[in-house]
Amino acid sequence: MVVICECGKTATIKTSWTNRNSGRRFYYCPACGFIGWIDPPMCYRVVDVIPGILRARNELEEDLEEQFLLMREKKRW
Image 1 (cartoon, rainbow, N blue to C red):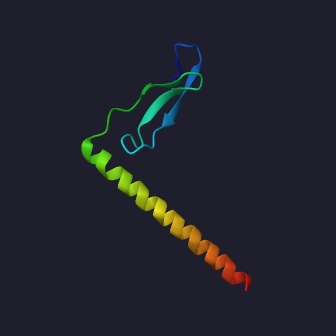
Image 2: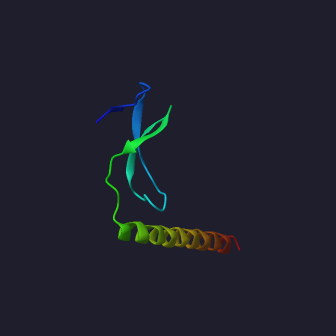
């Protein structure tokens, strides 16, 4: 589905990763900015839980990267 902004430009679909709207898709016009939501609002429980899950995931990725760097350094010795 193509959405044309009031300015005449084609809008793209983006995904929000803010705490309040994590994973919620919206139309975005590169010329004007935000146009509107595609997905309905999330329930309060989801809004409460998703940021914690994303933080935990980010921490695991950082730990994995650190372990990878340590292993690479160990191989050099």
